[in-house]
Image (tube, rainbow, N blue to C red; front, side, top):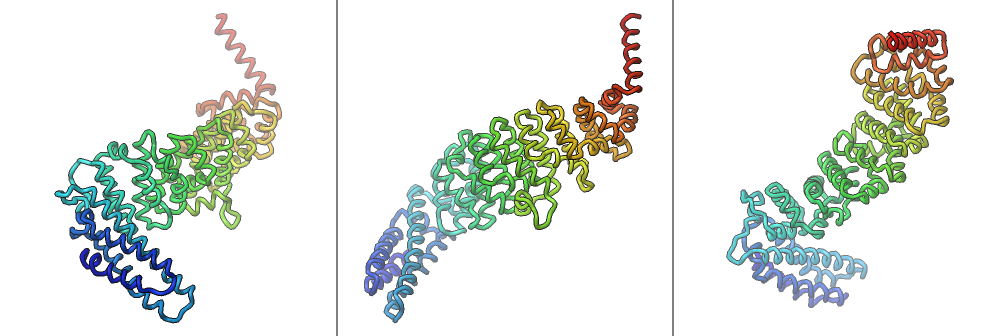
Length: 495
């Protein structure tokens, strides 16, 4: 087939092009490409690829043969009456396809030059060879195949690269450079089939997890990974999320990029993947980057406020696009906000985004799972016991109805599962902090907290007795309790 294409079809196409009328400059360029194509096909260096009965090579040659047939026929068609626009369009189309074929044939020559003259090309026959040796030329051949225009060649190259990574991941990663990685990054684009994107994302995930210097950061692939999280298959999204996690653990710049290019919403949207939950939690560790965290807080608060319908928030739209599980994603968002609430420097930002209202809404929701209410109660407890527990915060607790919602959690007759009991402990901790002021203490009492606390104290729930004591201070029961406590202390000291 090589002899027929290079020795017969190319000369015939050249003769036709040289006799063509109209657009002389364009035909001259096509003739130059045909000369280069003939040189490639007749180059001895291409024989290790072209001379073997290799399916990928046959695909390339078939594509070249089809283009040459069109080139040979086109000059004759150009003699027919037609507008210059149609003629130019037809010539440009075939010239573009010829450029692609020429590039593929040059890659075949490059691949052939990577083989020793006396050796056979095992990777062209079996990409899953049992040999444990991975060398530079092997990788170069695979990346040359990856640059081919045909999807089959890209599948072949990615499969071979994944097999090489399984054999010796550390060695393979150490041999990669920016051009290699850029070739993989291109295959993450949405224009490629889902399977290609999955394989490319898997390769990127291997590299990101093994490479300390992380050549992936040089390739600037964060945008493609974010898009893959938004629109990829389940496997593709998971691999992309893990890769982003690896990248952000190595670079704060990557974390900034993810936030400011819309990556947080899609990640939360697929938080049924542990990797996505981990990356959002890790980014939130940047306590010294308030602008970055403000973007995260906005998205997560929006997710927790989502109620469905046409008024869906931005983060909910991201969730629906990513195909994530809403309940699990809500839990991940609430958990992350809870973690942020422990940092004094960030508590004010949370207040500015209406965190008290959002968490109270979760406590009151009949649809919220117990674990979600636990996260909400703990977040409110962190805020109440933080350095920013000031008049403004306490007013927010009162105005947003936090006190009755927290008191309801104390009801001993409510579900007694582990999450509910943990939520009770957080509610007690929160109310202890708020009860330091007379107004809050009176409101807590007015909502029936003392009756619940008396029962919880009998059940030895941690903090219940202390909160009950604090609420009774200043009342007759509190004075008697305080007097009894002083008498008991004196008897211990002086008896």
